[in-house]
Image 1 (cartoon, rainbow, N blue to C red):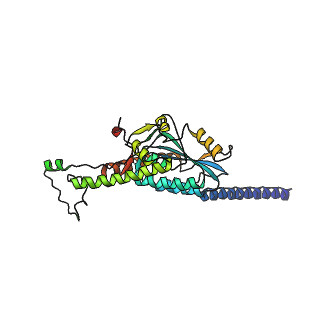
Image 2: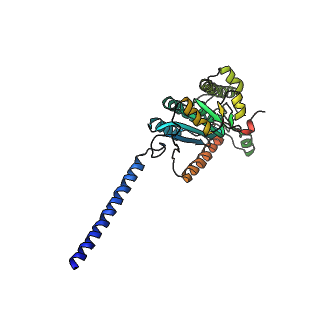
Image 3: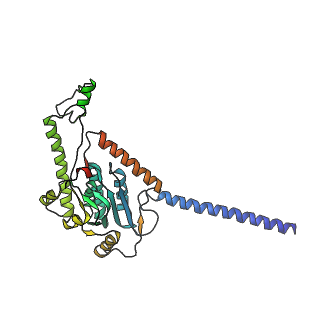
Length: 304
């Protein structure tokens, strides 16, 4: 009897050990699968439509460009809903993301879904998509470029502080916070802004299949509601995801039963922290830098 009891105990110990190693093996496989999923791929799963959001102020755009490139290369992603809720930001960042959306749209269906705001550089990104959906109340448009600087030379004079910069040419020090802008400097910087503006107009004209002259008529910096933008051919339809999915299914023949899944970009806390830090950094850059150009909707500058 003692031998039988010992055998039962040994068998139970063996089962427990086997169960432990099986659990450990399964956990290792799951961990390996999670690590193998690239950032911005939309997570583990089969064929799907990816929901990718661009929110807040736009910086250099490197993270978004990387995410969009990975979505383009993921065969399981059959289409992308590009949600936009941004007043714009850095011109170069918006241009880079625009180009990444163009490449993505050449590989699979893409619809820009405008949420609360998709203005300035946000609209620059939207026009790269073949189809744009906006809400009636969405604020969009604001096609234009702004370069802001300041002049505190008057304050420095009152404080008895003088600035004497050494420059290699008369335009090298333009603009400057410590020196008044010269007429030549003003003309030079205005030329830069207008060249960037021309590029922006060209992107809109190409993306929306519009005459550049018509785009210039609309591109005086003002924002439009989604309803106004529809009447002006700046967007294609009023609605949201349902309308975007309907376009994908009827025009690009995607299956109606494809699930829509968010692209995972960290935890909710991580996303909130990133968004807040990005807003602080870009706002500080806009305030302090004198060599940054922005495609940014500013309500205080909106023309009636």
